[in-house]
Image (cartoon, rainbow, N blue to C red):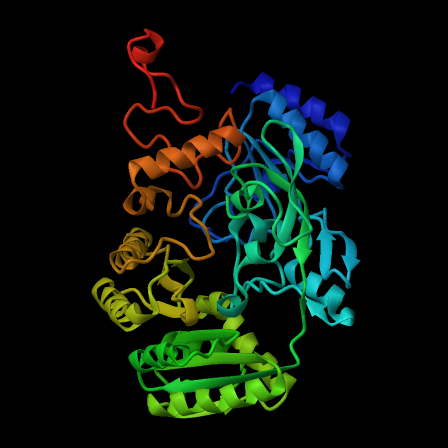
Length: 487
């Protein structure tokens, strides 16, 4: 990179985007230095905030032609550093592309731009008796484009799945400058599932410009409860028992004592702060079925020693319960000024064991850890809190967070359930995947991005080996000499 490259690109961008779409001021660029993973920061050379799809396409093509690295960013709520800018390149922000372009209530689909806020889509189709099922805790702020990039889930993913289950097609501007549609408006289009490849690729294969969302009918009824327990172990066993009985709740969320106290202080929702843990469980569907399952669930809670149960008697009480749960990450600020949230996954049967070991890590490190997570599918969200003003605490928090990931892998789990790998967990990828796996991932990525400039340094550990060059495969000298071949 040279200064002249930046100057040339700036002049070209001025010809293809409006004056309000280009941010060059040092302070203003600094506002985009991180996403929700605030422990990692970088200031991009240029920030582009296109006003519409045409500006977006023209701007990104200009950046591609400049051979400078670039990163796509939505609302910036990501928690793994997936939208961390490249200090040598350009940040492309999609928040102004926030139009719902089409709603077809008969086909139950909506076509949206990537900057549409998750919850706004559900609000827009509420009058048709429909909603968009993926509901990350940040749904009041996170964008559909970001949901696609991270394959976000949310509290109701246990029953309804992740973003990939609710996106039928995407229009993507590839790192080659080509604009393509992947997927179809049908549930299962012909050919390889390139739509599925892009969803969850963390912005490394291009930038989504339009999304065809699958909408769901609102359930006939929802019944929600919070059950309190005198131990995390008892709550975890109750979760496994519910599922073992063939009941599929829309959501099963767990909070430990620290999380309960923090959330109650933040929201005043009415949680019992004397309990060691609680489960927020929601059933939805047809009235008769939900009524039967609800009684069965209450018996399971009692069987596993539930202290008492708070049942939502109306929509206002249900909203209070979810307000408390979805405030958890922000509420952690009442425990410490900073935290690292992890996103590992373990089998449900391993929950008691893993949570006990996390408790030990908290005692050994002296760092408070709040546990709040999607218990139904074993997707843990331990918040390792620390004070960056105290020397050594941030490093200690990072070490504890890494040990939690190791715990998850040791139990046969995975590094991430919905937050993504980003920069936070990229160095742990070889702990989960073999060299052959990583090489396959790299070759797929290079097929989309031959120059290796789209969100580089994220998701895949490159270079993985000493002296290995990232990007497209580089022929071995023996190949070049005609003495060997690749197979």
